[in-house]
Image (tube, rainbow, N blue to C red; front, side):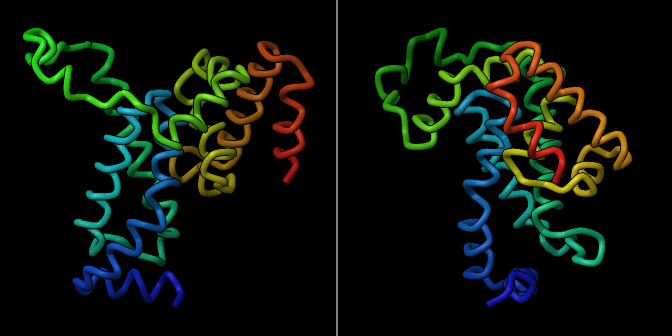
Length: 192
């Protein structure tokens, strides 16, 4: 069954269709959020929030304006920006002050966290943390979310040329930090 018909069914209130969309986009949304935030808990929260918002407001989605993935990526990037802004002014939960609940948390990393940990070891994530938010978004949208330049421009609310420029600049900054060999695959990808 094609995605457009699943979306239409979800817009008509079919819960199975909505669940199908959730299952299809859950990992992609998490990876995009993680790429932008570099924190598993924040990425899980943002991905859940973005998917929930999208599915509760699916009646607002118009396939003539963008693909569903572009619409969802726009929501995810927006939620990630909000989360990043809120983290600038850190807060300490009351439960942490009181020491309540810490003994109940399971700190065992899941499969996504293990995968991302391997990426951190390679140095790419650490180098990406040094990029400005706009340059980081360009890298993540292109290589984590596999967006076209047109989709990147729509999501980042900039022109196609600006999207290309941001990606090129981000790759150059990564090349300075990581060296040509580790960034070579990025340079070949930008030719696409």
